[in-house]
Image 1 (cartoon, rainbow, N blue to C red):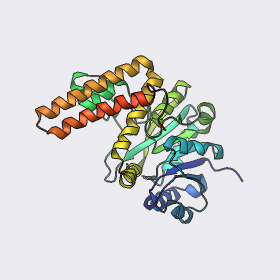
Image 2: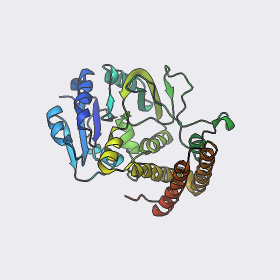
Image 3: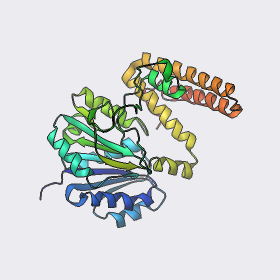
Image 4: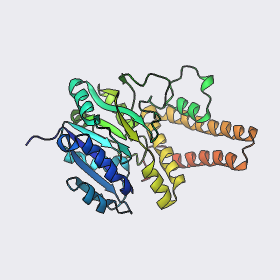
Length: 318
């Protein structure tokens, strides 16, 4: 029997209630004929593992005793791939009935395309950033401070002012629906395991493009992405909203050191401190109160603390 063309890779963390609708959407999209299902449960404390056995008993299931992070969990599945393509799919992303067939057909017809993403919308149909530019110390600073009007022509990470109805190449794609050619994984690998959460797909797309492959946004099918469910469960179960922010700060530091060098990291640290000063002054002028000003100080302190804890962004903290 021939292998199915796509292996759907799912990392689950405390999202038991989403598993049934997510797999139902895959089945409605022809998943039984087109896809094999590979799942990693990242030490969920809800009834996810039990629910997975009922919702999709044919899935290959790896159950971690510790939460190893999004990137490392996906990497665990690489040894089990059999199809031409691997589709990384979040548990809070629901494919349309044509999503699998259309994206597979596009990849088959465009062998230069290494990674494909689709049009993403929220619960109410609101367009989400589906096709992004690489972060730089400057565009991250400008995005945080809202100073875009002083930097005309600067490409922002989440650039929404373009025609979302056209196929186009881009820098990187969100990992909630992330279709990768098997040859890309064989050549480049998947995620850098140093990123516990955030920046995995940014770094991966950077490496894939450097290897000569195209990263393409494909708008001819739409995936509903409700967003943040795993992060929300982290906050509920660990009271860790600050920790989530810490993961993002740490991954940003690791990314800039890796791809922009020590000079780029130094510029990022300067702009983080300047950005928090700008935001604190804005808060003061707009009368937002002491709490808003203290939040800026906490962000600066957390960033500098993680710089030292990561040995100047050369290694992760976990």
